[in-house]
Image (tube, rainbow, N blue to C red):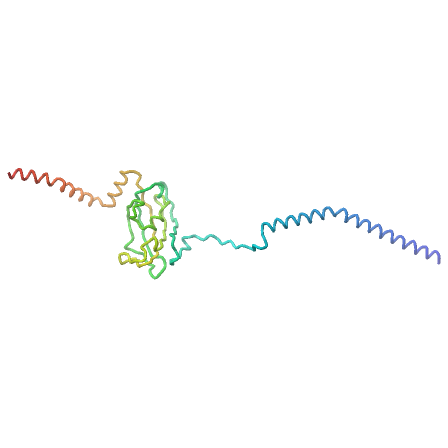
Length: 234
């Protein structure tokens, strides 16, 4: 019986020793990993602070809207006050707006935008128009819309009433408050007085120019001829 008690006591002592050893290993492991755990916690806290600064909780999520194309988003309403343009062909060479008082030649077709009138305005299909920028001989919205075009380029220009024909009928064709679209081609830009003269002559018409020249010469020389005739009669 005594031997059994001693054996039991020894067995219990071994168990306690083993438990103590395991506990020591566990505590030592925790102590060894403590710096790593502390570093990880600090990094987590630092990252959390940076994220809070980048994305404040009070601001919430912001929805970023995709920038729409002004030409496609043009609406024929009273609130539409700005023109909208879309290039269909990029030209080359001289550019509208790179100098003041440029003499241009353009051609264009026109149509209504929205509303009950949607057909093309055949009366305003212009095969050739010559004008000098800044002289207000062109529709304000159209002249604004061709800024930046290069020779040979083509562009669609949408013009609201405030930069078009306003709130009155125009020639019985364009109703009040009409939104218009012009499909424009820039034919040429004069670069010298000689080119300007040729363009104006083309616009005026060669035959009319010859006729006007003949009439001018006749009116200028007629007093001379009348004087000679009177002297002969005398």
